[in-house]
Length: 341
Ligand code: 13P
Image 1 (cartoon, rainbow, N blue to C red):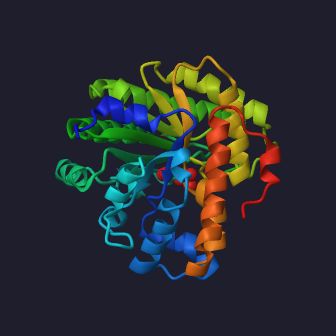
Image 2 (spheres, rainbow, N blue to C red):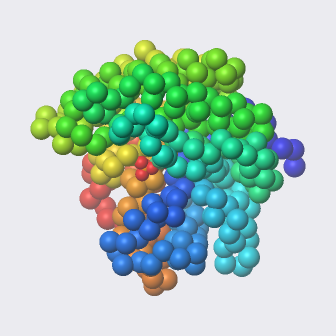
């Protein structure tokens, strides 16, 4: 079979009514998700958990791609099939998180920079051989009284741009992810301002680095009130501000924007996505690339036991379907009344 081109990978990832499952939690993040449920984080439990997710019946109707972690892309599911091969057989594009996490940005207290550029060219070539067709890199921007600083925005943007250029060089579609955190008591106005400044720096750097905008996907958060802000903006305001910010700062050449869930509840993440997608006329495709908002109900039901696999898979299917419909602007809260079997 002919190798898909980078343009066809983008098209497949952005198939109508589908989105991405982010299952690329690092060792500390997956341990944090397992811990409240008393599930130990071992190579076996992590593999069993991801197998439960990836083999959920008919989830490929709503999921076009899965973001994997380094350990997972090398694992085999029951029957010995390598994870990327299983996903390819299901018509799901395997992708890989290639950053190695954040560290404090020197001289800028409270701000972070993402690591992982050293040896990246060689790692990308290995991931491609293992079956990955797209990559992801996450930069983190926190909103504080005096942050983000211009230096933190520009440094993170330059690193994202280098990652994107190297990915395209390797024939992989980069998912460029600047995440403005929800943490804090800031207003939605402040979030819109910071999201705009972040996107402006990111696209300046991507253009400087000669990244082909048509061959990348932007992953970012919605414009939201800070988690501790006493005035929480409603769904309509979130949709309006998010789209306005994207129209101002995301070039129309970018084929798609995918959302992270970032700590929103699963239902809020679906409702807001639906409201955003109901507004027609956007130049980019818009969909989801949720981690927690897709996985949380499934993980709670799974609890680390093989006996709960079918119930957990039904929960994942339900959330994937709700979000798949939201992308078409066809989700309704009634759908939450039908509880998954
Ligand atoms: P959440 O949807 O849980 O924020 O995760 C998405 C992701 O990929 C973060 O990098």
